[in-house]
Length: 469
Image (tube, rainbow, N blue to C red; front, side, top):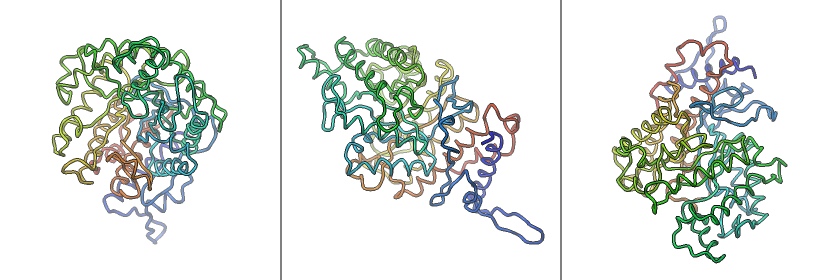
């Protein structure tokens, strides 16, 4: 579809969405007869948009693989097909395990369909399960082919719904094996390891991890026949979920591991982006920034946001937001204030020191928190989205966010308290959908190929930043 034509349609759609939000009908005139046109009427008759339960989502036009290209980082933005790619996405970590069982595989498709219906474009999920029930990697470099085929299914199914994947390669925590399982494997082979943090430093464990990386990146998908390292469906590789190395608060041990592994991933796959998976805590290299940490302990976990992301091979920054875990479990306005200042600090640093995009790759609030209610959750989500839009309108590094986490119906037994089921959360669904629409407009109207609206500010600015979240 012609870029400028798409810009026009997206702009027109947003005008209509905005007026509907205000409770105003959009009217057209034909001769003496007044014709009332709703947003649904327009969208339902457009070949490029659909409506779902009053939520508006932009469809990818065409199924041509030429339109499905790698996303890259360029300066402080993501780009694809010559256009910016701002992210509105989500986490669902257990997709591979569900796909490994035919009785639950359909939930993967259901989730992607629901996420697509509200315009979500990136999903973060695990490409690991080490030595556990339904393990992908049963022992070092020994894989369960049926579970690998389940991961193949997740990747192929994501593409059907035009959703890209951030695939995480190992866990810092014990769930799904994690670094503790690598240490167990090392000890079983005759090593004398006494700390889980030796995952980062012992050469044998580093070699185990590299072998896993190589196995995943070189995997040929049994559904698409595309090698993972050549598949644009994969948005990025994540080195580790929430790495910490508390045994070395200087940060040197983790920095060495990040530098080696980022370079190794790039040696196998120069096409895809790489990110670390950090929570975003400031460390010794930036003492003036530690004031933004949620607590004093955060400076002692061996991570260092700015220094870590300066490692060669790292393409964008990752940050998590959990005021209820880091500050206090009881809901308060202080959590919202922290969220805003935490985000603004990392966006500033990504611009000033790193020159790269930053994704807030986990954020949410638990229903188990004292004082929780769905209105507060919506307010938290709105705070994240508004802070990102403030960056976007200035061309800043705030490149997107990923909710923790999205679930389909019937998976409550997996819920850690943070799950969002769209069908049971209409107000939250509408918030997500509205933000997706705004993001889609930015992604189209700001195309560097566009010959008109991007050269000057216009009245659309009013609607993009109208405070109706």
